[in-house]
Length: 121
Length: 121
Image (cartoon, rainbow over all chains, first blue to last red; front, side):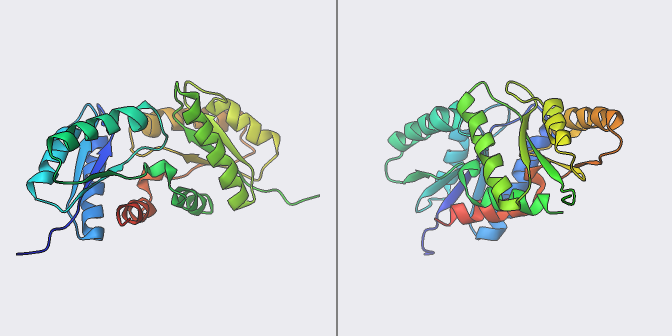
């Protein structure tokens, strides 16, 4: 039996523009290739799968833990309240698998590096 | 006389939550320190300064050019239409200073690096 691996759920807001949701799904594919781990895209609203559905998909793979990565730039109500609440509900329903909420993207110091690199062009 | 420098305008969507707008303003300060250049935060809606006001602030410094950096994750209508239109209006009004629209953040390959680094924790 293979040792269990962590799974990643990449959470984005979701858009009425399907092209924007597709960008997130493509990003999840590239991140999965980079990490060598399952990365499931999930959306707070307006697109599928929802966050609970995305967590369910991740749980189906029987991961060692689920790492949740919010693809958000600023810490609004979604990052502070909505996402933690949805994850807490899932954690109560499936206590055997740890669900760990990581930093939202905008909180990462590397964002400054990335913007600086773009601005130097 | 000092040689002219480029100025950067960092454009975010803007939020009803003032704390989220403040995050963008703090990010502009950190980016300015990193680049050693003026970085002016500006908002598409819901916060000040607006994009035209931010461009005006940048023009007041008599820059060699203005680099516009959209702090957006996906290429929706704002990135594709609204921002280019506002910049084109300004470029017509001030043809002597080049205004250059750079990649929105989500289009940068470095975003995958940043997410991968977060997910490895």
